[in-house]
Image (tube, rainbow, N blue to C red):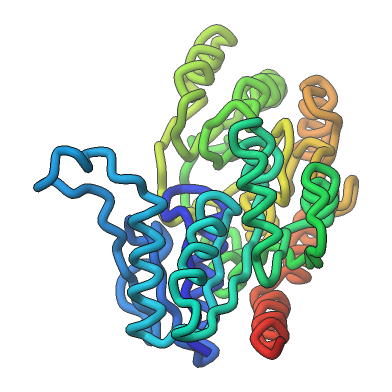
Length: 375
């Protein structure tokens, strides 16, 4: 098959999954064309049967178009690539604007060639942006005009139906997946040294937005730090970084918290991690948690959104209600103090992550592509 993929190329779960999906599809013999305004951050160098088509977002020669709408530029580029490369299907990640532009592309191709559209919903396109009054109608329209819709968790599927009705939509759940050839445990001798000797390594990775509750990350870690030597690595960047830095200073643990910024490769860091913190307000799935689990790092997270579909409380991780800083901190300390319990949970985390391996999940997309194209 020849598949076009449009996603946000920047740091975040939806772009990471879309890119990893494209790479896996290419390894399986499909031809994959990424169509977006920048090379996806996980598209590292040359990959056979993978192509990138950049969407021009400025028309500098014409001042009238200094704010040239990205949606129109994207639809134009999608139309161009579909025609020139003979694509069978456009797989777009995020309802708006990507499903909207795909619909426009299909209409532009009417009478020339058929084009199927699959839209994968990742979270905030439904739970936040799509429910804004100014975007509600077009989000609903774009979902219903897709030939197939998928959601990364049962939670998100149910939220989509609740919020939009999605008349005539058959929203299939295909979970996010992890590349086990990159995210896997290593021996103690192979683990990188990222902390002072004797410190436990705690980690958080996100886009540093309000929904991630970064202050709770710092507060949970403060309770760990009071109980034992520990270092917290904060990976990512975003609007709430300054607040998190201030919280660390006010709790007098700033010397034990390192803000590393955005990193493209995090597997080695996760392989050295003793505990991963994800106390989010909501997560439609929790890709960062899954990747940590695959590396053998138990996760302390909120019992919210799709996280309970990934983490089994008390078995492959720890779940507590949103905002339960005391409970999260207490259970984190108990786990880190008990080497046997920590090892058992780390092994269960790896086993759980294997049920979301690329080898199991990507064929689900392939089968759905074939089903969609046959209609």
